[in-house]
Image (cartoon, rainbow, N blue to C red; front, side):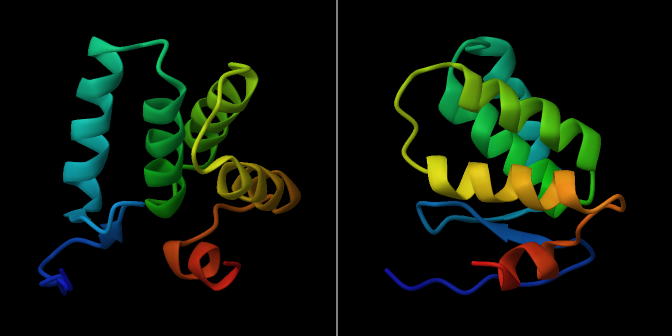
Length: 103
């Protein structure tokens, strides 16, 4: 199924399953999911990516590193590792556009 986001007042993010969400809604939903399953590295990884795309560098790094340190299989590990490297190398927050361009 090919869906296009309708862009309103907020930035739009596409998760790995092709679901489009407004970033604030995505962050809120992922925070709620994390509260229900705090040890799930996939949730931490997706929350970290949403934070990164929203420009919240420190929060992104915490969640991304938590996911990677879990030792469990993570479906999008290369993307998480690349994002940690990019955020760690750049002293300023990266925008969604610059993170997407690195793919």
